[in-house]
Image 1 (cartoon, rainbow, N blue to C red):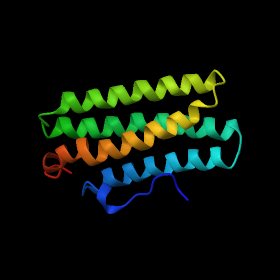
Image 2 (cartoon, helix red, strand yellow; image 1 turned 90 degrees about the vertical axis):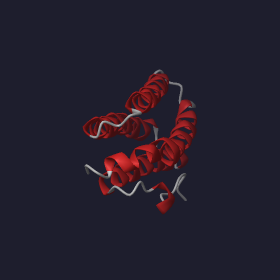
Image 3 (cartoon, rainbow, N blue to C red; image 1 turned 60 degrees about the vertical axis):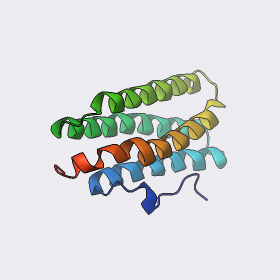
Length: 133
């Protein structure tokens, strides 16, 4: 059973963004499965790296669209992205230093943050982005 499941409540109604958000769910669940099945640190590390790269890609995409439509809360939204990146990077560094327990903390943080961010913060840009995407 996945840690977090995509459902229509998470849809922002913009296909490309929904697709990117579903990818996050998939990566979080892949990390959960790897950890749960004891597949080893190498697989967890690979998923963490893919997640780290994808976070940056998605946030840059979202931010570029927000700039294109002159989204009035861009700075606040970008700040949330920056704080999430800092937290993710910190947890990855801890994992690389051998603190394997940080994987659980990462899963808790990512699943809670992603769900909250999509259901609250991302909802605010929908009317603005729908006009350009």
